[in-house]
Length: 294
Ligand SMILES: Cc1cc2nc3c(=O)[nH]c(=O)nc-3n(C[C@H](O)[C@H](O)[C@H](O)COP(=O)(O)OP(=O)(O)OC[C@H]3O[C@@H](n4cnc5c(N)ncnc54)[C@H](O)[C@@H]3O)c2cc1C
Image (cartoon, rainbow, N blue to C red):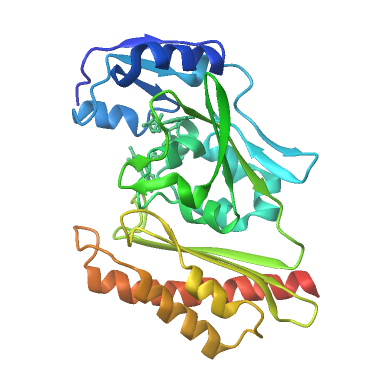
């Protein structure tokens, strides 16, 4: 695959990257690891004259706990670093699992978590885990910054709220309460190196009496963008978890999904599997939350 000619720009700060972006506008693209961008350039679906590489910006490859109790993840933090990070594994197991099944080890060593989200694919492995953990996306532009909840970040296939003069500075993920369990489920056509045909993340936090104080369910690859199933979250909250309750929540998830048929799966299969995976993710989340509570 040949890539059309382009000029590579190597800013030394994010501010400099923003100035370059402002001056070249839609003729330019931001590049982190390049594992999505360079494929699109090879396929001619994107033909930027200028590629602004974030690789030359120091100190933006970080995963760190902030004093306020949030995990901050920078724009050059690789998927492999997410997989290996002890805080992610301890507090955000669904994200740890999703990152570990994203692509191959070679791609995880180049590709970033933030690039995976900015690409705005409805099937991005890491989108639904970040949604159940209430991730905030910090977006900067030359004259300021804004913070967007991740479920509002996606607009449709390949489309996000990012405007031309903006880039993602970091993700902020609040550490969940102690009695929280979460889980990630993925089905793909091939067992390895394949994007998700269907993916589901769930999170449950339990009160002392065993009732659900917080529930999150998010679905990927079954709608034009990753979605939260707020209706199902509502029926779980305040209740004692039972098989019947999880069945009801999983049925709602199935109803909320609006998948298409493509080479990875038929719409009917996707709908059926959303129900199955939601139930599995809830069962696993409950088991993990119960273990932590006791
Ligand atoms: C063979 C193969 C298999 C793959 N398998 C999977 C898979 O199983 N699951 C999956 O989810 N993905 C998969 N991918 C997709 C890809 O590897 C991931 O999406 C990766 O995380 C992208 O990160 P990156 O740093 O390489 O992004 P890049 O390619 O550098 O950027 C992706 C997009 O995000 C924009 N961008 C990047 N960083 C920023 C920023 N800070 N601010 C604003 N915009 C930004 C870029 O302009 C570009 O539009 C696969 C890719 C390949 C080639």
